[in-house]
Amino acid sequence: MCRNIKTLFNFDPPVSEEEARAASLQFVRKISGFNKPSKANEAAFYTAIDDITAISMRLLASLETTAPSKNREEEAAKARER
Image 1 (cartoon, one colour):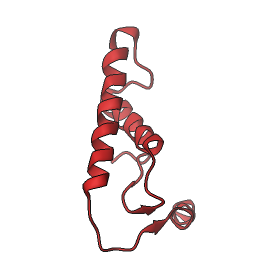
Image 2: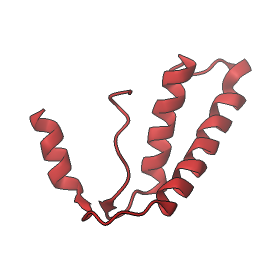
Image 3: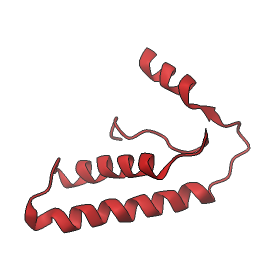
Image 4: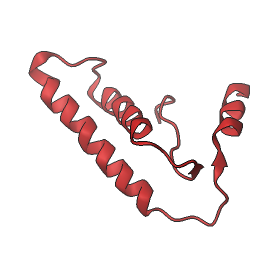
């Protein structure tokens, strides 16, 4: 998995659309091989980001868990320690 894509589920407060879009951008960059698309591929690149963001938000809204929500600051501190 791409190291720059972070888990977005089960955080308090819940993930924002901006965070989901950033993860979608990283995903599209990874699978396309483009950091920035050419003019010829720009529409497809940004459409994919929009679609993946929408699908990701729908997925996150439908997932259920009994685990307590994770704290963003604690998880960020753990990541820095690694």
